[in-house]
Amino acid sequence: MATEITDTADAVIIGAGFAGMYALHRLRDEFGYSIRVFDRADDVGGTWYWNTYPGARCDVESVFYSYSFSEELEQEWTWTERYPTQPEILAYANHVADKFDLRRSITFETSVAEATFDESNNRWLVTTDRGETVTATYLITAVGCLSEARIPDFEGIESFGGRILHTGHWPRDGVDFDGLRVAVIGTGSSGIQAIPEIARDAKTLNVFQRTPHFALPAGNRPLATEEIDEVKANYRRYRAICKVSPSGVPIVPPIGSVLSLPDDVGRAEMNRRWENGGTMFMTAFTDTSRNEDANAVLASFVRERIRDIVADPDTAESLTPHGYPIGAKRICLGTDYYATYNRDNVSLVDVRDNPIERITERGIVAGGNEYELDVIIFATGYDAMTGALTAIDIRGVNGLRLRDEWAAGPRTYLGIASAQFPNMFMITGPGSPSVLVNVIVSIEQHVDWMCDLLSHAEKQGISRIEADLDAQNAWVLEVNDVASRTMFVKANSWYLGANVPGKARVFMPYAGGIGPFRERCDKVAAEGYTGFTLTDTATAPIV
Ligand code: NA7
Image 1 (spheres, rainbow, N blue to C red):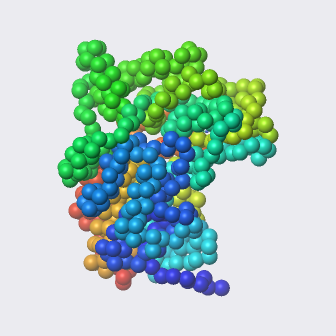
Image 2: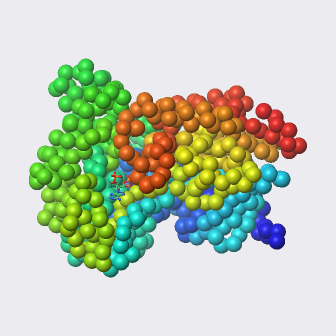
Image 3: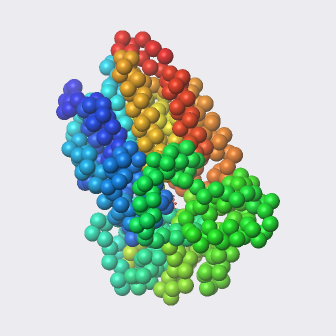
């Protein structure tokens, strides 16, 4: 029986977070395309819709973690804190949706289940879990890099008599921890933000830590009116810096090589940046991201701070990261994180050598002890970068399935396209710099570049845009090569897929920075979209 088509569009966009909203705005309001957007949530915001756990906050400064495409938007929105809270970011997303009237093109509480490329007409056939079937010229995935939450497969989890939560799927009406015995499993960014907040309310808090992460003080604070005014007056200059900088934010320049500077000068600089808070601690010196001896100086400084802050020496030792360079796992920003372990109601359970054995009706068993609990919070992260894409049954030419093609690791060209999946574009896909930089800058770059390509295609009468296998193979090699020259490959992290049992160990993001990535993409465009085969409506390749 032929599939009944319920709608026809120029493009289907999956996801209504920051990437999907911007793609929708540009393609609908500038290009005049008919667009259908689907999102499983009941409103906009993507990651920031779901991550409502206590303490959730962005680790990019608010004034830069915002869209640059509308000067009016920049001027009318006022951030209140140095690092924005989740509610404030979500309010911003809602403001953008209202201002640009985005919701009328978005179908909420609807997941895309399948997307199949039809070679007979070069269109995608997209099916939702609510029975809609839409055909579209383009399929644009804006599914987020950290949106497929992961709960490890602990034995007995279904028998737990209390409540189970994941930081990435927090109840929208909040959770009252008053008088409860709570466990947090996981000490990555989410755990480090949530632990101090939950400790304040819970009767007891047991933190189950497998690997200590380096947590720097966020140095969060309210923004002064003068600071806001200064940024607003100079937004164009700041945005220009963000676009070409490696990390998508203006950096405080390094003062030199830590190995060449006198010890007291290096130490004073680390102290200054530690006190100021934020990730600029990581850019104090020129050599710490490449040279292991230099990196060790930075790491030792943080280890000393942990020992200074945490009163119990055994707990301090357990919290101290060893065995991998600082920055190899994502740097976490916290507020009172280490000091929280000085509270009487907080205990660290080190499960590095004695992993969690099972979950029982009463609680968690680890190291031969049973911890009795009312709530278990999984801050155990995500099937990052690929999980949300491979969860959808995406089929390209000859019915090839994306999840099969990527079984040994994701394969993309510039993180935006994948060979044999024509007319499909990934915003912040694997192979893009997105998760290593200010993601909003990355999103705008991807969407703008894709829009230029679609505009070119329209002018040339091109109906099929496909990444070449050779160009893709070369890009995959380059992504690996760039990563191999950094510290990133020296730790087990979600960047490498190491947090998901059975997932291919491949470094997924492009570690060369957003500035160089932009240059590279612009060169590809200037040379007539090298590495893509563009086919006109009469199916003759143009390039
Ligand atoms: P992360 O950074 O992936 O952290 C997950 C944490 O959960 C991490 O400490 C893991 O330890 C721990 N984990 C995962 N599985 C287990 C098991 N089986 N047992 C014990 N501990 C476990 O996720 P987040 O949500 O904190 O942050 C994700 C990103 O969101 C973050 O980087 C920011 O970009 C925002 P491990 O280190 O793997 O030993």
